[in-house]
Image (cartoon, rainbow, N blue to C red):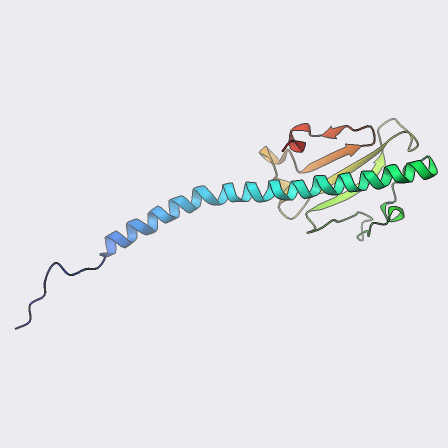
Length: 145
């Protein structure tokens, strides 16, 4: 006669379901944190691209005594909307004269987030980064490491 030993190893369906629920809870907490870290990393890329564009603007200003809104004149490839799209395409960078000032006085660079960067920061506060030739950065909290 074959008798089954009740002390055989293995998992019951209840035990497996408890593990699945625990993993689900951990994933639901960890994934949003992971997304925030990824957005912060991409923001650093956007800040770096703004700094690079501003450095070229300053070189151009030294040569011609005026800033430019045409980023292709600085050697940047532009998309169909005449905006520079650096690296992974998470930002669109454009240039304009600062409010109330001529281009021979001040240029404003704006990096607008896309591909998920619209949600960067608390309520999307870091979705648009700015830098002008006078060194003013905005939003300030988004530029801090």
